[in-house]
Image (cartoon, rainbow, N blue to C red; front, side):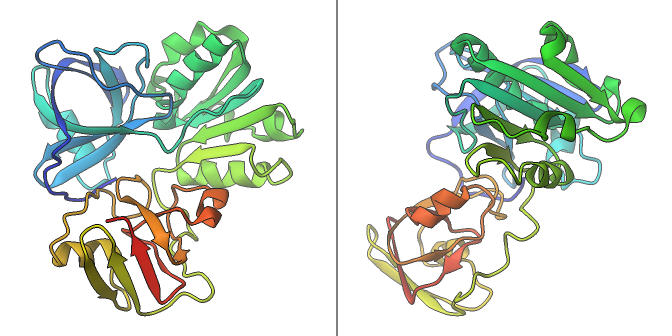
Length: 324
């Protein structure tokens, strides 16, 4: 996840208290308040923004315990074909480094259930770690199917091994592609499915869950859904955005971003990914009907039209009134 962003007034300056190699190509960072103070509360599935430089802001899932108010942990996979964020972490962030941190925010919350089927691919294991802790505390039944390229690249394998047969490790070089049918063949009314990982895995899980109740599957994406940016039927080339709080009205033309246009007109909106996947720019809709093109909100949430991601979404109505 990427992009530049003005300095966030609500960001914390934290120190890297510990750095460790968690697996091949995966570095773990433990962040603390330099003065030893408590950190903001968060829940399983939350992520934070790391302001790595003036032009690098990246989101990483918290994979520590929500009960630990003094330490936040993230795990960062080196993406060799990426755009510089993970390379900066691996090459330049060391124990003692100071990092401005925004959040936490949660667009992947763990809903109550009697049973959970967790599915993780690679670094997608990170938000699942605190979810397992929550499920354990609630006394819920759960199982994890965890895939990776090879065992040596699978972070937290030592911790997860302690859960015995509730965790199925699936290194691709030994076993091939994940056997999703083994855990998703039978739809269960008492089970929620939580999945995080690369787009190919998410699409495969969505297809495998097509016969499950629509509300059963919850996913978190690292990239926009393949069809997310396609305009909805009735999408307008030009529309107006009224900013109720600031009293500014702007016209959004073909190919223009609501967020960027607002910034050009003096409204300093927070944003990060500019792809509709991180949720930083989530904005309340007061009037009008958005053309949702994000990969954050569920279909039900999009249908409610209460919020929208203004970095990518547009409008189905001539005027949108936003709480900005």
